[in-house]
Image (cartoon, rainbow, N blue to C red):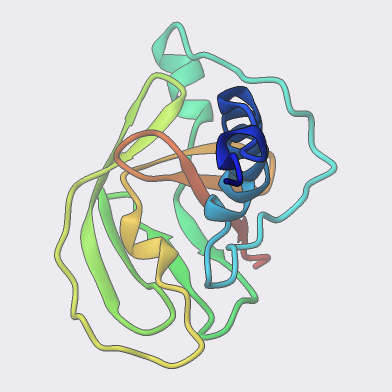
Amino acid sequence: MLNLTAIRPPAAFGRVMGIAVLGLVLPLAACGTGSEPSEPTSSASTESNSPTDSADADALDPTGKWTSPETGDPFLEFTEDGQVKGSDGCNAIKTTWEVDGDKVLITSFTSTQKACAGVDPWLSKAASATIEGNVMKVADASGKVVGGLEKEKK
């Protein structure tokens, strides 16, 4: 009679193979199927300025139009009266904004929910932003940077 237990690999071999497979598969699981939003680069200093008085708070001024060259031309336009309008490249965005320390807080908003082929609607997740020179880094509600916009030249 043939002893099959002698041919079977030890239990530790199965654990090692399982860990090896997870090590190869988990990094791939983090990859999205869509395109990642591009984050504009800037030659401006990357130091973060934290406003400590009203004069410094005035230095953080998002007013104006911030754009991206991505498909659909997503943008946000901040007005002095605290209004924001824009587009995620497909759907309209309309909300309000305010400065809180070194961040621009973007009030929760609803937008149209059209599906547009080839458009990554990352901008519709905007909840806050930081500004470094002419670059606005847009973050979602959890604080994760989801993309970037560049200040439109006048």
